[in-house]
Image 1: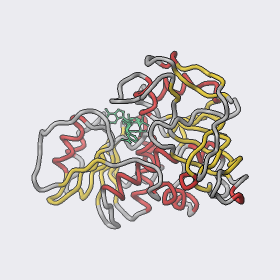
Image 2: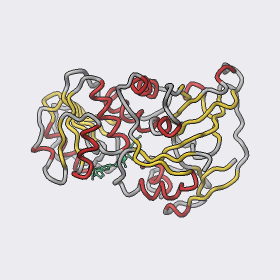
Image 3: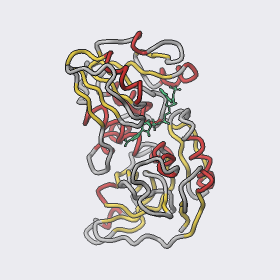
Length: 308
Ligand SMILES: NC(=O)c1ccc[n+]([C@@H]2O[C@H](COP(=O)([O-])OP(=O)(O)OC[C@H]3O[C@@H](n4cnc5c(N)ncnc54)[C@H](OP(=O)(O)O)[C@@H]3O)[C@@H](O)[C@H]2O)c1
């Protein structure tokens, strides 16, 4: 089968299409023929050698999620699942950018009717991240006020919709060119970060979901109410500026098998959340996908479709 790998860390040009044996489908596992995969900022960071401890060895594959059809099941898995359309978040270090992948059966979630492969592949890592931040780490409840940074990005675009679906009031931060897009996602209040400091536009927040880190994280402490929660997902190192003893700070834990992907897919099936796709490229554009995501300026998700 074809897979995208790199033999050394570096720019997107280190990525190459290689031929590998099909993965073996062991007990408790399913073999998925990918129809689409997505690119995530972490893929480019790992490929560039910027992620501590990753990749563990070279050559390495890339990608964390995808969507496709179950082709085979291992011992102990219901054979009735063969032929089902699924999407998945792969375990850390288990690359998804290949024609076929093997994963634990419980990590492959049935795709809601009416959702195409590209749409399904756009949801796993970004959706699980949004759910992990808002719900699992953030404890967001109906009626609360939440500030979401980088609302035009892959995670932010889903986070805005999930927060609204949970009954929260959403302040969303983006730059002016993305204003209409984020507004259409359902944000109650837009804060255009190229026009005003977000601290000037909101306060008394119950929750801040910080997808940026660094000084954004430090400044976010200022807009929380007493006992408010600050949840980070990321990324840039952050310091203790504006530290407060009367708020709690946590990092979201993004991993498969928590029920988060099912929860997001159920919201999609119910029409409460829609996939947010900025570009669909053929699989052969794998290096271009990495190039685009590492600009940090893409809108929604970039998806690659197979074959292609
Ligand atoms: N820990 C984890 O497991 C995990 C999981 C998922 C994601 N992450 C991290 O979370 C971050 C967000 O992920 P993502 O997939 O949503 O990224 P993304 O799709 O690349 O986000 C792009 C958006 O971020 C906004 N942005 C860029 N630079 C910014 C800045 N300095 N300040 C504020 N906004 C900025 C831009 O919108 P505007 O120009 O409109 O603001 C852009 O549209 C990434 O760093 C990613 O690595 C971590």
